[in-house]
Image (cartoon, rainbow, N blue to C red):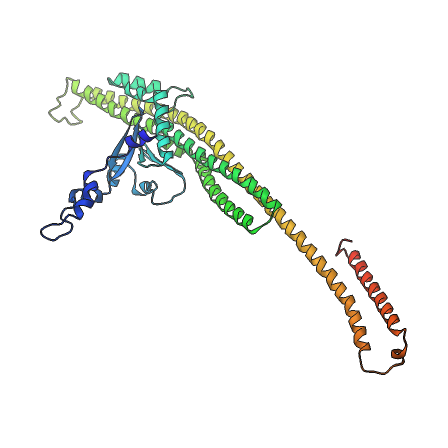
Length: 441
């Protein structure tokens, strides 16, 4: 991995390495920035960015291209390149354009064309792993050899294209589908690993919370739930993006870049062969312009019939290839849709487990709260019974002369009668609470 980083990272320019020393070098004129390499600053001001290019043979190289050159190279608008900017955070997106596929899946942000894959040069391990895995698969499958063997005349080129796109084997995929498959696999694997880590951390924490409810455990569960919600949103976005592509045949057909490139090249070489036929015709001269009225009707009929036959053949073959490519891409997307849907189901199950734990904790807290209310009711009843003794003591504490005060057994009878009345009142309240089911007795 370290060798790959050294090979993929661009060399540090001399102007950037010496700009600090040169900027502090004193000058005779007294200007502090006289020693700065202005050419290096101008180059950096042009907005050059380092890209990793992987071709169909699995060869990688680092190129520096500015924004507008990349737009012309891949025929993309500026808003599509903005999706790949690491300074902005955009949801996962897969866009099929005329000559490229823009992929923004988690850490994998790349542009896939019919001949190469362009990634922003980064030290992220997932980007380097994507490059290594794509090179390994391309070299193992020999996709580049198929393209390199397509030299020669027009007839051999046409037969190679027909054999290539007429192959219905499920093992064959065009280059853009290989790159897209590796990107989908990297994104799904990354999200699934994060979901697995979250599961490993969540279940012991939730079990601990059920056994011991504390502020620290509640705070940890709150943070865990926030991470779960964020991860679920990202997984849901990837799932929705794949499902949207599977539901739209037009978007899937737009992503078949090799087929579109083949049709353009076939049309170009067909026009070249027609021009060669005209130049070989001895009835006309190439240097002198000929009016349509003066051209022989047989040549015009032959040219028209050839054009109609070629257009019909191209339309039929392109429709058959488009249908086959849609089926191939649909099976590819369906496989990773199952993977990302499984990850979403795991996160959904974890969220349901958290909700069940929260419900269990709320039930526990409600039970404790009910016990406290029952204990408070019991204390209130006992306080009311004790207050009866206070009332009797207050009555006998008045400064009044009654014969009961002079009876030596009066205090004993008053205490016994008051205690019996209080016990009867307390038992009456307990029976009422039990009858109303306010307190389990």
